[in-house]
Amino acid sequence: MERKPNGASSIYRGTDGYWHGRVTIGVKDDGRTDRRHVMGKTQAVVISKVRELERQRDEGTVRRAGSSWTVSSSLTHWVENIAAPFVRENTIAGYRVADGCDGKCGQQHGGRCPQRIADRTETAETKSRAGRRTVGLPDQLVMLLREHHSAQGAEREAAAQLWNEGGWLFATPTGSPINPRTDYTEWKRLLSAAGVRDARLHDARHTAATVLLILGVPERAVMGVMGWSNSAMAARYQHVTASIQRDIARRVDQFIWSNRR
Image 1: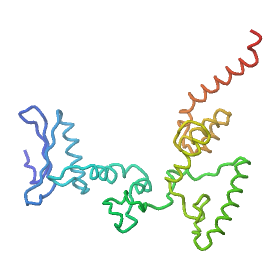
Image 2: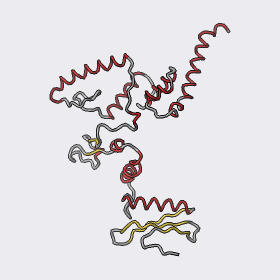
Image 3: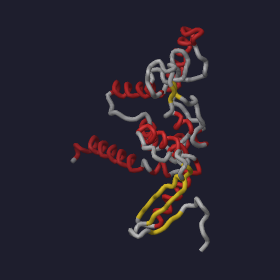
Image 4: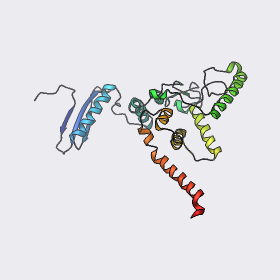
């Protein structure tokens, strides 16, 4: 059998009945070879573990020998090397913050600084081509947006030279983009004032889709408004809309025919 070159990974079955794998990562600080060991009950499991170690080694993401995971290092590794390939760049950037006071606050981490600065751009590309679309607006909403535009014009005049012209439809009193946290807090305040159950801001999107389907808007039109690329998304709402429609029918039945029974 051909001999493997020095440093090549090895997989074998030990006398203990388990499968073992060894992967050369590099050289330790003391000059010795850094060779990692993995084990499992089956050869397939160990092959998977060995390939993962080799991938981390080749990408430079494997942790150093002798270093233990802390909460900080574990979360950083997860964000930078596990989550990053599968989400939008702006989403990952949202987890990164920088110290905004040049270390004067005494905090070791930028996220704890009272003047922390988000390390991301204010805008990003949509997730898909369906994200760029034109939708119709109810007349009442158009009227409210025009009133808002007039109010924003008054804020622009009041801010004078402090105004930051960025073309934002919704902005701070000085024209800067609204912080996502501020938007979240305002959403929660509106829910409380309206006396409705607590919900995520994204739940309002689900509500909109449900209402459109209950109103009998054609599925293809709903897909266009919501930006869905296939009908599978609409199918997720069928059990909800069907239940509501049955309840409406029951109430109409009780209101019109209850006295005739």
